[in-house]
Image 1 (cartoon, rainbow, N blue to C red):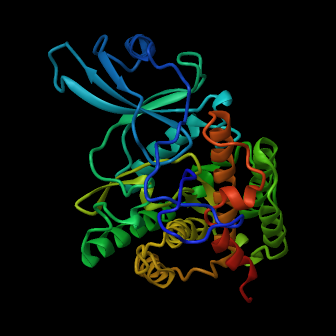
Image 2: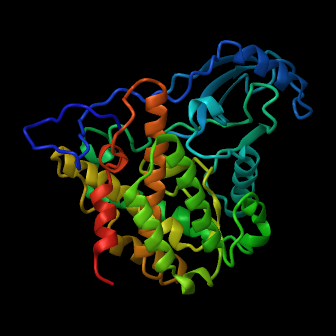
Image 3: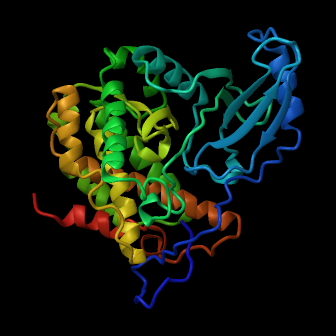
Length: 394
């Protein structure tokens, strides 16, 4: 989100970020992509899995996509060997450069690649086929992988789908519910992969030690916040929330089954065709932990966009992704009754704070905004939502 003038005469103040119904695209990178087609074609030609010779490549690095983390470059390939298909369309996921203020401290493109391939094989879910991985950064300056491109529609982040004037907002209640339920099913099927700790144990690499996967996740979040604060300034709200998370740690949930969690389980990371999922994207936050992490994230992400609607004076989509409905659908699909989601929602709220802090630091870096004097007031569009979660009764 970017700070712009208000759309009406609503009062604004130091605790209210300003939200407009139109924004310019955020700058994600200053990378020069002019040499990418030639260098990438050379690399593909020499790759041991390529038997078709040198492809002709055309790239589009100026896409308008959801998300603020890994760079996505669209690649059109043409093969002149006479075999079908003559043309292929890929998406290249590339780790951001350190000088472009990455959202996360580290990027494991090899983990994303392996998780997508393994989860697709285990579930049959519409996870794009991954083609080639370059994990070292020696070819293009950053690690990357190529995956098949899937056509369809994505609920927009900018402006949020809750703001209206988009295909999901304008859909019928029945179509919206079909999309909601099919999205919950994605999460349920990922959680059903047997022996997730054994199959995806590599996702624990680089995480802080803990007596459970959830305790390790909380330690990772604390580390991420500290590095984010170093780049943009500390947040009293996040300091308070992290203390609350530690003091109210859900020991019972942490001791339960660990499943594969998608991590960024929200509808903005799904490509849909006819309101059904056609591709599941953005696996950089995948990890091992309680299933409540994913379910609460999906609900909270929508609540953030509802909060933005309130700031902009818009009605939003209050009947969509309601907690009771999500919990009921998940229970029908899995037979599992989820525990209380409040702790996990606060956890999600802090993750969003760190994302907004990194996005803010990036905007300062690219000269789009001045350095904020008050991180909580100027960067956290979901501030009141997180404050309510922290202050509501037990």
